[in-house]
Image (cartoon, rainbow, N blue to C red; front, side):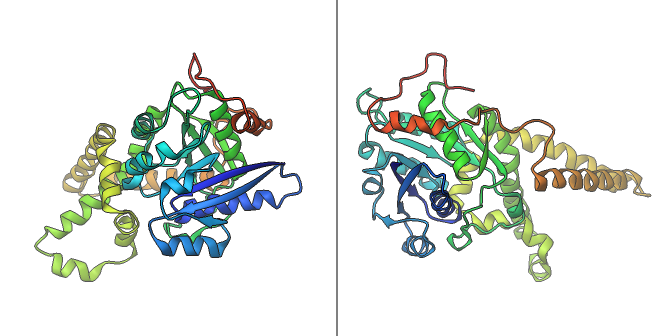
Length: 343
């Protein structure tokens, strides 16, 4: 059984759930690796709660100390902390360490990693962008606090890998097997493609929350409006409740062109809806749009909850590629791929 040191940077729901998923794996009879988990978070409460839950074995007060002995580093902190964390851990990483970056955007993190991580052959460390989708059972759970951590948070859903083109194949293989160990179904994606999709599924909802609340704040009727807020309104405001303002800014600023394109599409749709409201007295066109949207949403929801889509979600062989860990950590170092990472 190989002993693997893991450090988790960021101990809210996602980070702590990584730790719990690794603990669950080790409890299986067929487990072939033993993980020792160190955690770090700026909030002492998150660290204490992660220890209470059993998600981590120990903690470190600063990022550099936390990663000093790590074979794998899971970066799951607030997005506004990501650039500083790379600068802090770069000099402290041991040769061959792999950073699995769960930040909401991939291309910016690839750039930060290239600047901060050692690249010389004998001391190099590596970064793979990851994007674990949540267990379908958690689709409507918007909480992100550490108290919501659970070992099956990533079960029965996609575990997307978005490595840089020159990322060593061994590091990518390691990330893929890690995704399967925590319960995901591995799928590869180009970092730029991922960020384009993230503009729609992450950036646009955040933009809507900011825009809608700003519209109401500037309204003359805000004093009355705020008294009538109910779940319909609160659900749309979730990004403002659960995300740090600087993280929201980073999500939009670092992906601004993609978000702007998605916003243009949304504005076109809103203008069509406005025209229907103004000119279609019988509301037939509006009714058609609402009925179609509700029906198609129900179809999509069924597919997402069952995690069954039209195409196979895994484009990665299901063998035990985690065996490459012995080479990664106990002698052989990955080499840069001439043709890019495996896709």
